[in-house]
Amino acid sequence: MIDEEIANAGADPKDMEEKIIRLESNMETMMSKFAKIMAEFTSSQSKIKQRITNMESTVKSVRPDDISEVVADK
Image (cartoon, rainbow, N blue to C red; front, side):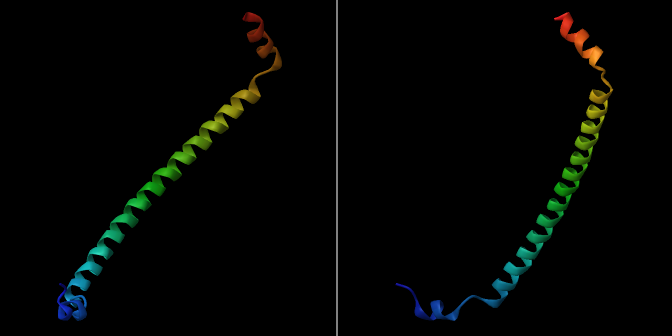
């Protein structure tokens, strides 16, 4: 069965401290990875917005006569 003294002794403070240090390290790693992902997302979002703006400008510059010529060619 379970040794009651061991069960009642609780966790070793040294083990707890090591776990906390490991958790802090993991948290720092996760935060740096998250910051990198956010930077990549922001960059991609900016590029996509610029592409959309360029496409809108292109579409606005197309005259109705140009569209009817394309439709007539088909």
